[in-house]
Length: 469
Image 1 (tube, rainbow, N blue to C red):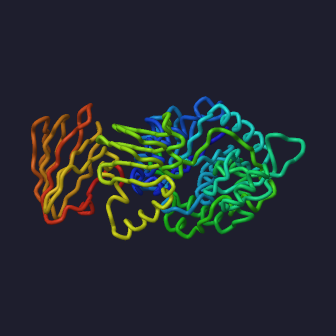
Image 2: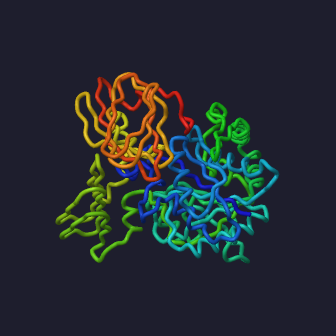
């Protein structure tokens, strides 16, 4: 059996303003109509040795991840929640401990959730070879056949064995090189891009981790042993995991073992690490443009233009990135898009909300979107999914007025419970306990008008919550 371990952490700030800390790139539909996480799972469909996946993610993303996984054709048995980021070596250790807890020893296939793979057939063929190597006790990594001297990737140097054409012993892992060194790597022919994809038996990884990075092994084991299981979620021990050193699998394990092998693959791979990379994997027209959404372009070449909600027009520009969202507009030269992290860091220091959230904010019960705001008032458009409910809560600094646009709502207000439907409304006074439930079979849509001295999302006191927040 192969258990894919999907690493779905990370904030993807290099794709701001579309990717935000609370809604990162792996949960966004960047290259088609499904998210990158869903694409990662879907390309495993049809593999005879895979019937479920294991996903690791930040606690903040858990409900979005759970919903997206349910929409794929492969089930998940558990979603492991990391209390904080500790890099890939501890994350994979948690997955490995989970995989062997009942005495099994499956092959783990470690996949980042935010990569593009165009040639799925070749990818799946490589997995079968990787399984054979893993069952023979080797730690497998997949090296991307490098066709250009990229400076944004790490590299894997392979040793030619002389009697194998598709599997090579690993000589060394090397850091991101400068341009001259990268060119030398390509000319040498023994170097491959480090894809961040790995394959090994769970026990093989744990034994190697214990031998070469015992501190990570022990802290990860303690965190897993302290885990609490909540439906599909595995909540590992927070204090135990906080004490775990942060390190990548490359440094903690792969560079130190003598049984690591690399399988070179040419699968149309991209880590979509920048807007320029996203341009390259998109549908490029005859003028070198990738145009998404309601875009009109004239005399525009070699550019990526994305319009999410309104008409965007470009005229007489070349080599540009233009990304329009509800609350932020990015205009950049393609040669400078890597500097976006500096801008995001600056916005973070200024505590700008645009770093963390879109105007459309997803919650386990549905989503809401701010549509107007001013001194002492705010207007939101709220959608509650069927059978979902907000928590029983109150606010110390604001009152709320709800107007139902469609659907049927059950409202709890103080000691009252009553039903309101389309074109009906109700008022929630400041300090009053209240809850909103969708008791219908269609999404409940309403307009919420908030008024008060403070309208922040942290002015919520929860008393009951079916989602365990």
